Image (cartoon, rainbow, N blue to C red; front, side, top):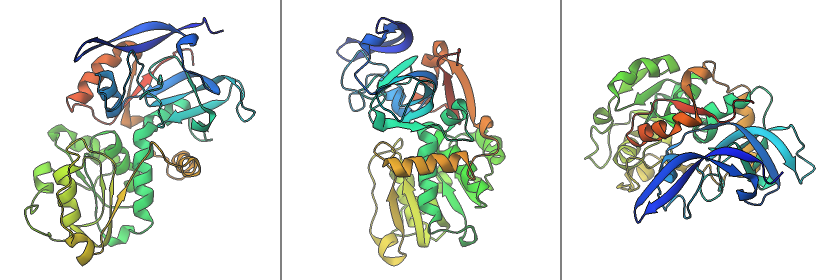
Amino acid sequence: METVKFRAMVVEQTGENSYRRSIQYRTLRQLPEGDVLIRVAYSSLNYKDALSATGNRGVTRNFPHTPGIDCAGVVESSRLDRFKQGDRVIVTSYDLGMNTAGGFGEYIRVPGDWVVSLPDGLSLRDSMVYGTAGLAAAMSVYALVKTVKPEDGDVLVTGASGGVGSIAVALLAKLNYRVVAVTGKKDAAGFLTNLGAAGIISRQEALAGSDKPIGKALWAGVVDTVGGEILASALKSTGTNGVVTCCGNVASAELAINVYPFILRGVSLVGIDTQNCPMDHRVSIWNRLAGDWKIDRLQELAREVGLDRLSGEIDRILHGEQRGRVVIHVNEDI
């Protein structure tokens, strides 16, 4: 069994600061030890995957390496009683695709504590339209809706045409919130309107008044996916007892903000960590995404590619050209 060959994207270091990615054949013997061997049907493309695929040492320390922080597939074998051959499962986050061979290969082998049974109501492909991006979006919405109600006012979503942002727009619209979407892509208006956005503003509009200590109260809540100056501006423009969630730093990891939104308006800033999310909460979120939170037009959020076209999609996401989600059909026999 350990000599079984499979295809995978492999990133190799070719020089001090140069890396090459290619589709190669690997063997099961080259996978790490783990409790559950999974034959991968689908994966998805996230910004963290693109960083790993270009040799970012903050994401992946050792090369050669197979990225892919998301995976949906079928159990091939298991040392644990709770999983059996043929079970349909999801693995996202933890160390998958970072320093453990990830979902851009036809097999993964991981600890059993990383594995979630595929909920009823989702296909393997559906789960990868969501992937880590959907998990982050749903965790953000979950944190927000505990306090902010639809009648409280508009909810801002930043980075709205990206993976997390687009799913957050669709989820909030499904839950009857009036969503204002921030995007830097002029051609994204139709896409975001179809997802349920009631208003669309540019990055420049989102930054209006950011030079003031505190701005006019515009938002009942915010789902921020980019960080930096836009997050700071959103905090200053959030109304009394509003909730702002933060799950990304593509704009900047720095946050220049004073205390006024917190002490004058009682604004809450909630961090979203999908990588180490406790399993009970993770399962609860997946069940919501499969149930009453399932997006009605889920397939419109994603484009599908095979492993052979994945490298080009990595370049697109690094250049800020990805819209919605990219699903990778890793193994076309599943």
